[in-house]
Image 1 (cartoon, one colour):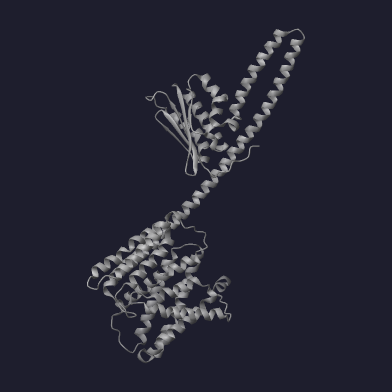
Image 2: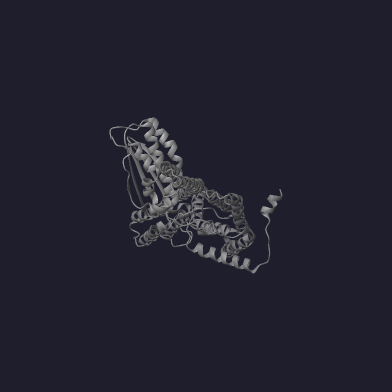
Length: 514
């Protein structure tokens, strides 16, 4: 109950800005009425737009401004329609719409944008029923049309007026919501808006003797409006729908306020449905785009964390290898001293044999440590480290792996990406050596396209007629996918080859080697 009371709490300070707002609103309603028609009622849109743009503490001043507008407009009508109608029909419109928007405000706070169509329809229907109800009850003069005709025209005029001005107000209230306009569509956006305005100006030049051409031009403005909606979601629709309605309203033949144009009425009914469809489509586009971008951001963050985790693991292996190298250097030094001691004490053959064994074991030790972590990669790049390290020696000793063919400059890639490529090449060749019998060839190509750089690796069987077994394909994908996903890569096994792609943004910062 307290929350309900707080939500309706209105502060009523006597502020000069409030009375200025009331006067400005009243003047705006009077100006909007001058270009309104029976099916294009701009004051209704101005009413909803003002309630959207200003906080609740200023709503009483908006109500005061509408009362001033009605007093100026309807005071001369007292003799014709009566004092009761003049007062009662003017007293409830703005409070009713304010209550409707207040009920929908919680949906707006929850960032559910589709609430606007519901609020617009409800406001149009309620205001129309209030107007017609008071007029049928209190007018001393009979109505020219039946209730259903007046209700249809009135609700349509109210709704189109709301769709003309209120989306712009909603767009203004969401200007700080973190949305960034897609600059790729800047030229297309300006072109679509220019086409809408141009079609409107062209419609003004159509003679009254060609109503079908006029209606055709009015309907054509929906095409660039659809383009704006597809490019920018509901924000594009919030600009396109008001532009379309304004063009249709201002190009109608009626020149007197509240005049009715039957030829335009059909086009406006079609475009009213199109406007609702565009806003709904825009909300859907924005909703799914928001989910896509949120999901994409989560994927990028996850990939960044995975890359950091992989790189941290590589750095841990690097530290271990450096420690093992130090231990190996110490062992080599000790064996050398022993060999020199033996030689100096009359055992040259034993010393020579010890040195030969020491050199051979030292070389094998370094080859195996390079399989754990290729320290040469940090100095000469991926390609040379593959050929000079223990990995290349292992491939040569198997007599089943041809000399790899590698194109491009891998030093332009980050160390993390080169390490990932080193691991996937080693793993792919290892799986094929273990589970296939044919000889193997390795091709690699690295490069950069736009702001993305990467490497493409193909490990294949030499015989094009042989196909990799299904079981081998499954093992390859299981082992390699975990290393490629952090770099936005893919693993594909088709026929006789395994294709691996690893990519990264050129803006990725190189982590320091410790």
